[in-house]
Image 1 (tube, rainbow, N blue to C red):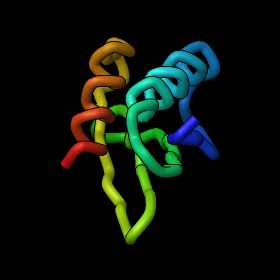
Image 2 (spheres, one colour):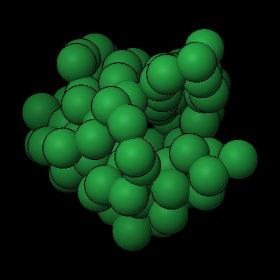
Image 3 (cartoon, helix red, strand yellow):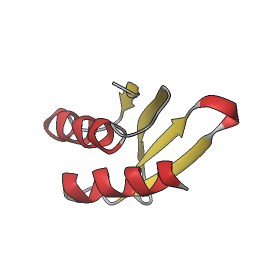
Length: 81
């Protein structure tokens, strides 16, 4: 799996699995290994920090109630930047 989620802090257990799976699905197309950390953001919902080769680092923010398909698509778009 090209993107590995190392941690998901502050996300309710009922949502954590779906969010993690959506982030991993959004990163399936990348050529090299990338890492992600998911954390609750008190003002926006939650944040996904994605790092990768050659100093790649991006943060993506999501609303707490965003659909997993939206999360996957935005992660994909962020990785393609």
